[in-house]
Each structure stands twice: as structure tokens, then as C-alpha cells.
Length: 446
Image 1 (cartoon, rainbow, N blue to C red):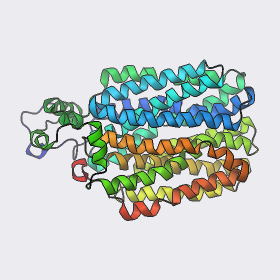
Image 2 (cartoon, rainbow, N blue to C red; image 1 turned 90 degrees about the horizontal axis):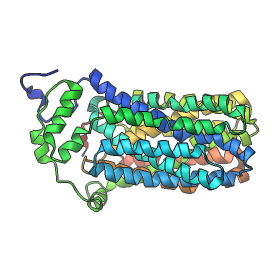
Image 3 (cartoon, rainbow, N blue to C red; image 1 turned 90 degrees about the vertical axis):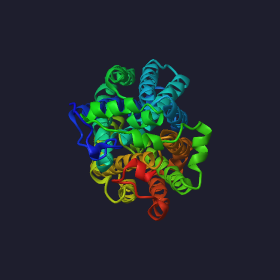
Image 4 (cartoon, helix red, strand yellow; image 1 turned 180 degrees about the horizontal axis):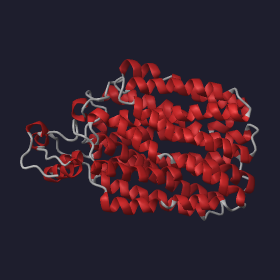
């Protein structure tokens, strides 16, 4: 709606203190839909891998190779998405990433050999993480400070219902025929629908627009979403000119940001590989642990319900304790449930413990995304987020060949004991030196 004057209380404000309108929620819904297709592409290979091992004669080392290049491409996608979204905008980067991961999934559906699977999955990983890095900073910039973590968690909770859905589809479709797994990859190509919707309705981040001195456009976006006029003239005058990627990178390690950069790097270097061991390898390891392909698919489907549940849990607790307390609490939960999971052998105890483990992993992951994205100013937010999260993916890529070795030597307990160890090690660093960000405006944190 329009107002005849700019209320005094809305001068130099973005969305902080404003109610989230219906139009604003539609924007969140577009991101939810994009997440849905992205996560369909992200999770599907974990269910398909046991079938390829059986039908194509692939080994765990082959699957580790696919996962290695997938996460290596994720690293490049996160770096690329972070840098270019700080220069060409959040909207263009977001939409381009959808096209990349959707086309990659379709190509995977036509694959006839391991080499094609490797490079098409790498293409998918590049697009998936390019979008994820861009979207987290984007969500931080268009959400009110009071409920920033809540909306990031809720958007993910809805979008990540793709995880149990793809698990259900795999359990239903894959047993139909030796080639039925291809349809799962083709479903992932439906992300192009999200691209078309976003092309029409997705708006640019007003904070990014202000950083480009496009203040009038930024004010219009806020008015379109909230129905309230704002005056950003004073805050725009304080925004520094756009920096080059090199200056942004060195800025992360300047005296002002060095401590938080090092704390975050330590956190992602340990916890991100741990969480992806759980999400990527569990369906395959359940099969190797003694469950049949059908039972492992069924167990994995139930475990995947924990994905949106974990994101919803994040929405409830993320804004409490300055963000870093729930971050560490979920890491402790991963440690506990990982150790319990490693000791079990029968179907239902494994499934229940695995559900709790996956829920903890997802809650931790999205609180981590929020924590990183809000720790840097707009001029470097996406570049810094991309570098931080890509460091975690790079560590994850090198962890993939290690998992089969650990499993061969120490079995199920060894793999999930490794997960527990990786989550415990960085806790003290974040508790002692991590900054409190929950409930604060992005400008105050910067």
C-alpha cells in the first residue's frame, strides 16, 4: 500500500522492525521452491549410488570418486557464486545457478558410464552450492533482524521436504527396473520451473542495491514487499564504494574481521565434512552394514524426513543465544546421536537414531549458514560466505576417499565415530571466540 509521507521511524531502515507482509512471504516462497528442486538434485545420488554399485559393478572407491568431484565442484560453485553475486547481484546469480544444477541433473539421467556421472554430478554440485551461498546471504539481507534465523530455517524446512520426497520416489521407482534410477535424475531437472517463476517475480536485495548506489530502486523494493515507504539516504551515504574481489578477500583478514574469519574457518573445516559424511554416505553404508537395498532405501526415506524437521528446529532455536549457543548445541547433538547410531544393527533402532542424527545435522547446517552470512558487511557478504563455505566443501571433498578406508578398517562405528570427533573439536573455539549475532541488525554486526 502507499502512504503519503515517510514515517520518521522508517528512516534508514531496511526490514528491521517491520512486519513480514503477504508479498514478502511470496518472495520467501519462491526461494523455498528453488530450494526444493536444488535439494532434489543434491540428495538423489545418495539413493542411486547403491543401485549403480549393484548394476554397474561400481565399488565404494568409485562412489567416493563421484562424491570427491561433486564436492570439489561445490567448492568452485560457492566461490563463484559468492564473488559474482557481490558484483552482478543476488538475483542474477540465483537464477543462473538454478539453470546449471537442473541441466546437470538431466545429463546425469542420460549417463551410460562412470565418467559421465562424475562430470554431470560435478556440474550439479557447482550449481547447487552457487545457489546455496547466494541464497543464504540474500535471505539475511531481506529478513527482519528480529526473525532472521526463523525465516532462514522455515524457508529451508519447506524447501528441504525434497529430501524425504526423493527418498520416497527412489524407494518406489528404483525397484521397477534396472534403468528406473534415471527418472530420479530427470525429476531433478524440474528446477527449470523454479527458474521461470523466479525470472518473473524474484526481486533484487535492497542492501545490494544500496551498495551499488541504486538507492531509489532499493527503497522501491522495500515498499513493494512491506507496503511501507523508507528513506535510505543517510545509510546510503555511509556505504563504502564497491571493492574488487582481491580487496574483499584481504578485507576478510583485516584486523577488524580476522578473528571472526579464523573462527568460522575452523568451524566449517571440521563440522561441514562431518555433516556431509552423514547425509551423503548413510544410504550406502546402511546397505553395507547388512540391510538389503530395499531396507536401506526404506530406512533412508525415513531418515530423510529428518531433513525438513531439522530445518524447522533451526527456525525455532536459531535466534536464541546470540546464534552461537544453538550452533554449538546442535553440534553436541550430532556427536551424541552419531555415537548411538554407530552402535546399532537392527532396522528400527538404526532408523530412529539416524532420524535424530539427520535432524541435528540439518539444524546445525542452517544455523551455520545464518551465522556466516551475517558476520560480514554487504560489500563482502557473499564473497566471504562463498569463501567460508567453499573451504568447508573443499575439506569435505578430500574427506570422501577417506570414508571407504575408515569403513574398511573400523566399520560402521569408525565412520560415525569420525563424525562425532569432527563436531567436538571446534566447539571451544566458537564458544570462547565466536561473536554473538542473533537478533542484531546486519549493520550493527558489521
